[in-house]
Image (cartoon, rainbow, N blue to C red):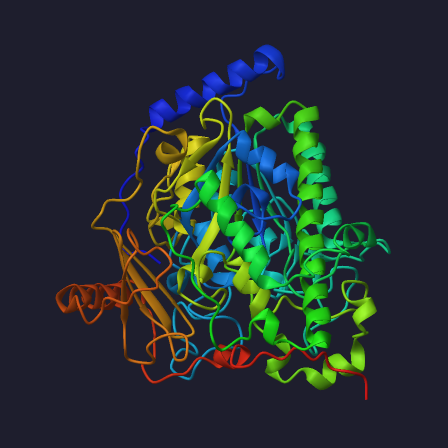
Length: 573
């Protein structure tokens, strides 16, 4: 994702002295044993849009994330990959997804990509994970939730540095039971590499949280700091929530997309998430406005968003339980907490893969069952556009709506309360940041006898602490590519290659000045040919540095998931 990164702005010695000061301060009132090294908790949502949660302008009830934002800092210019596995691979390694195995998603390789380094579609051995580094440095390492970095037992989290893990190996699953979320793919749950049976009252966000609390409590006797990676599957399709949370939203969202998006935009401007002068991207003409939908479609669309909101609300509730537990055992203020999403909101229709007959024959698709057991519903492009406020497009795209994530960091004593930062950041920066917080050196050129790639990210500790205004220099280049959709950013300038009808089409780049046009509405490619040519050169550099295999005349298979708006749920024959 990035060619080069500057070193962190916070010298290691200063970082450690600040950590010790935080621990001592905590010990005075809440923590009787000062700790030299803090815990780290990374919480990852799945397909959550930029504006969904309350701290970023959303109306969904998320009081625990709101409190975390009040007690920490929000990063409003933080970027991830256009899809889930690449983000997760970079989060854990600090190395570009095209190097560490996810140049594309599993089963989506082109003929040119199959068998090539970086396109294994599992987390390969070309980088060390942050869990491996921290484990070797004396940390307890825990992973719970969606893995999506290898579906075979020899590629699970227990093989990549996690001492304890409870993982859904695949990228999606029913949230209540072991039931297919895609045809012929029965979800695999593994605890420390071994098959497990889910309890009858299982619900993903609830049980993932319970398991993380269990691991933390089990290892308290070790008196070691922990690195905990909690990867929720909410709000990834199939959208499902427990009845208590569905009931909270039964009267919501009946007025449609436009008023919700307008209210979010107003709040985002008021709280400083976006500049007051920034224009919001309009609804793409490919997808109809609320007023153009027939009544039956409106009923279905209303229910979609009710279930989506219930999922996010429930995720927040269970995250709050974990936060409260850390507070009760006097560990919260000695824990560096990060919350983010893996990509933009998902506006796709999964049945466009040809799954209509499977869904009709295996799922209960009645409107009244939507969101409950064995239901199958997704957010859809209309509401994904709302979730992406103020940007355009979402998951699968290299536009800002697909790659900009809400991010919150909490760590009292080092991270000031109530802060906002518009500094550019990347998911590649998380591993360097975590290592600096922990006072652990970056991995060397080899690990356990194998050559490994150096980190490409920069520590954000100076930014989140308020001691630096940027982690990256104005000349640094960051790149993205997925499904042949491309982007390069240098400073405030960004070029984007997206297939029609959402971009100029294959072989044609768009150019945007994000300083004045953060929502990418004014294409300057024709007015700035010299700058465009220079950035295309940076794209060529990025391809060479990261082993990107992009095919110029390739139309992404994922395109078919966005070409029409199908509001009709399949029905049983």
